[in-house]
Length: 286
Image 1 (cartoon, rainbow, N blue to C red):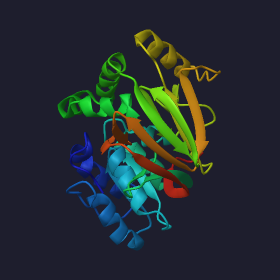
Image 2 (cartoon, one colour):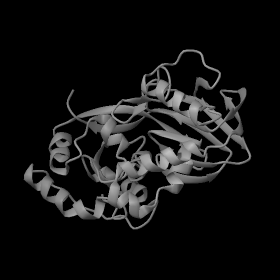
Image 3 (cartoon, rainbow, N blue to C red):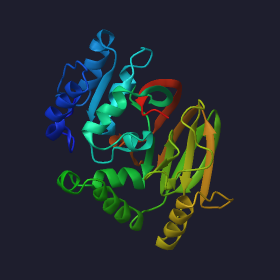
Image 4 (cartoon, one colour):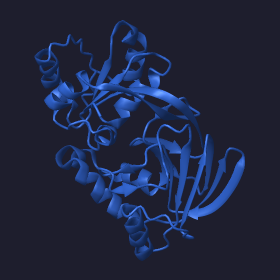
């Protein structure tokens, strides 16, 4: 299942089909037409197949993963997007031929999902503030040309112009109020090949989501916090706040744009629940 709107999805669609044939695997291909189409097709057809593979970005992958919760059909992620965060985290090769060979002979793993109140699932992180602005301000053309560096450029700009907002986070019934420029509800511990860690002791298989609140007040603060995240240094700091829970509601003032796995969601509030072990994925052999 491929997304032609992704950075590499259209270019590598035929390539992926040939890669399956090369390893002796039968494969039927479907091209998605619009957001939501991949999940709809997967839910309708997956029961007739041993596995479902996606070729696109993280949004396409999590759309399909979310649609297949409760079914014993694993999802293999072929990296066809800009960030490919899930593929990178799982250790899936970015080369399509190598990814197909690795996943066809791979293992099954279980992973938690975050589920928004509108029904949308995410596998990596949801957030408001800097990261949503980064997604919004990364031009589609720049993503197609530059790939992952396009996000880094947009992220740097977003951090430098970040403004504080008020956030009220209710975690399993306990309310916390903070000033913030970025708030994450993380399911995965890190990005950039493990070099940048969102918070302490984050796991994707513990049945919990992790609230991460960052409050830099100027570019110097932002640089200091980023340095600490790169070093996974989570000693007590008034500009960092972390809390775990199964259900998290975010309310912001003024209302902030939100994103989940790189897809814009609109404005707050958002209620997010964890679905423990809901994602069944193919991963490289350990």
